Image (cartoon, rainbow, N blue to C red; front, side, top):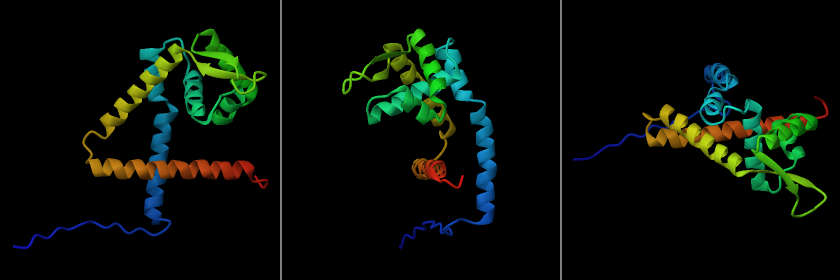
Length: 175
């Protein structure tokens, strides 16, 4: 007896079909509406940190991501969030007052001031991460593991493309 297995090979054109691209656009609009409402962040604030605002969570994430590359300054936060440095400075000051962040002298250049998370800030980031993870797990709970793996790679590639497009447009003098 011969066992035949069929594998589905998906061949797509380099840019995808017009219907596929239209579907991506429609789904992006739906996703934007959900993320625009900041459902997960609002839930996190309600459950974990009633005294914080949505922008505070953004700054915490910017500090967390920035720490991977080295020391985080208000300028790094402003660049990461694509906001004015004076606005970033005001938000950091609010968070310092709430004991979520603190300022300290740079270890590499004592003339510079860097921003670091306090223990409370670190706990909030860990709890927020756990909440986000729980939401993602709920959404893909009935997906096959292979679909999750494929989606995670393609979604990352898609968002990377957005970031690269933004970086190019930000440096393009024609814009």
